[in-house]
Length: 498
Ligand SMILES: NC(=O)c1ccc[n+]([C@@H]2O[C@H](COP(=O)([O-])OP(=O)(O)OC[C@H]3O[C@@H](n4cnc5c(N)ncnc54)[C@H](OP(=O)(O)O)[C@@H]3O)[C@@H](O)[C@H]2O)c1
Image (cartoon, rainbow, N blue to C red; front, side):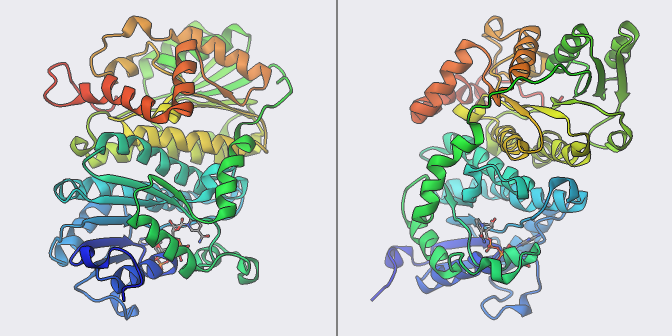
């Protein structure tokens, strides 16, 4: 008799499992195979190292590669370009230690494997998954519910992955199932690969047990599944640790660093802190606006740099006591129409750059402000990669809280050229928050020592709706944003990244 549900109706169902060469992926591969699925595994090592894999069912791809899209396409073609009914994004890498000690390469690889690869592979396979009315499963982690100071980048990458799924699910509702599964600590090789001793993992759950729960969860319909009773409890109480109140006032700051300081919210913050008598170092790639600010304000120092290419200036900064991670770009439209390179850029500027800058600047022991987005509470169908990066930033802020004060800001629409460019039709421009008002609210929240700021009454209302009635908030976002992004909508114009 079949031990697992779904065997008979599952015959000939094609499944792709990434990271099928070790740990949970390897166990999952076995469960699916034993249940009659046609299983394909993806890994980075040569096929002859694995008895359960062959050239017919193995895609050898290094998910950290910069040309991942081409490599994946080639490997997929090599196994006959099968249509997958289920894709399990399981491959992942960890890092244990202070963010300031994590090398740039390790940080980039981690974000690529844990976040960028699942997004880009989903994009490649989406039209087939739409045809087969398939299912995409993202293996996240219970760490998304807690601050993760000893593995800040890992926690941020998994939180970003969940942010991506929340928005993508709204886009694909009724067409492709999107599921998130969060295991807790599991006794796999992942921990030793980042230097943890085997003895420390003794009490962790066995990979076979966790993989079996994951396998069963994939047969079900739940959108988010946390594996294990204790871990479920963690997801309930963890958010209190992330966002609980903090009762102290921040002293006034004197030297402020702002990324993306020459326009929009960044410029408003620059002017706000200059008015407070602070010195402001502003980084931007817009030379003309940056130079104009430095001509007008003696206390403004402009660093002309493209954050995509150059972060060397951060190594030689004078001491700063407040860092504001403001620079960001968006890429909007239905996910299946968006270019991979654009998604890659959004992840780079909005998440990788702040991670790298935090790693470089932690030695300043400065307080930090992260400009996230209201999408954290309500999803953002039509900009799922952007939403991912903003959730990643919010998690990073919580993880760095122990080092010094961090404030995460969740703005709704703001009257800037960025919002104008990415709104489906700009019908409600007048109702957007004025950037100078937002800057004042941020300055006040920082002085009060708040951990989070949802600026404005309508943003607060939307956030409460997202928390209390998430499905109603998703419906609303789908109607007011996503549906207007449909290519048939004449008002829709995606001008890409600024
Ligand atoms: N273990 C835990 O405590 C735990 C807890 C929560 C969530 N998770 C998540 O569960 C998933 C599986 O983790 P695990 O514990 O099974 O880890 P694991 O034993 O280290 O397995 C990870 C798999 O991902 C593959 N992989 C890593 N980097 C890759 C790359 N650049 N290209 C292609 N494949 C790559 C690994 O290949 P190699 O064999 O070549 O290394 C391996 O097959 C991950 O997403 C992890 O974040 C794990």
